[in-house]
Amino acid sequence: MPRRVDDYRGLTQKSRLRLLHAVQRVPGRRLQELAEEAGMPINTARDHLRILKDEGLIASSPVETGERGRPPHVYSPVQSAEHSPVAQRRVHDAKTRGDILRGLDPQLDHSDALGVEAVHQLDTLYEHLEDAGLEPEIDEDDLTIGLLPCLYEGMLDTDRPIVCSVHARLVRDQLEQVPGPLELRRLHPFIGPKRCELVLGRRGEQAPSSRPGGVDADQSDSELEQYAVRAMRAMHASGGETPPDGTTASGTAPA
Image (cartoon, rainbow, N blue to C red; front, top):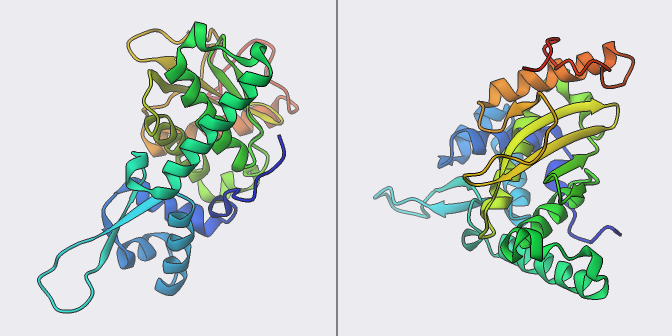
């Protein structure tokens, strides 16, 4: 699929990823607190927050302090499309493009098996991941999404991969922005030299994917980060291939 003009610039710099991670970690904080955690000047943080907001990744709202002057703003992730006109447009456009493609090629239509709402969730998630440069490959039967992680691999050992926790949170947010049954269940970082995998499932049902191992998506940021580092090192130790015995990133066989 050709790139659109609104690819995510906000995810292309380490400093913005650190700032987005700070917003996700503790929503509802002001500019100064976020800048301090991300380790950057306030003016730089302000510019980065504007870009993240312009791309529908975060939202801001004023807080009443009782003091004169313009009220300060606090920043939070966009978990509902109603909180961001940009997110609303992205969701609408993704659903519209998906419906057009399915109309042109009925073999692409999985509505009978998944339901219309789930299909529209996948439309929105696909375009989010595509715009982030992760080249998603969706398996509608297993509800898995293969990703190309190499854009961010070099950041993992230096930034203790905020990358994985940031993207896991974004995936959860994207699925929540569209009414539907699908949710993120597990992550399989670095199952190959150029591949990670997301596992989705329906609420209240077991995920259809049978791939062993991985890390639960509801783990803490630090646990996701540590698992991603171990997975990357295990992949390199095995010569860039998934270990043939199915060992996990921690070096143990899956239960």
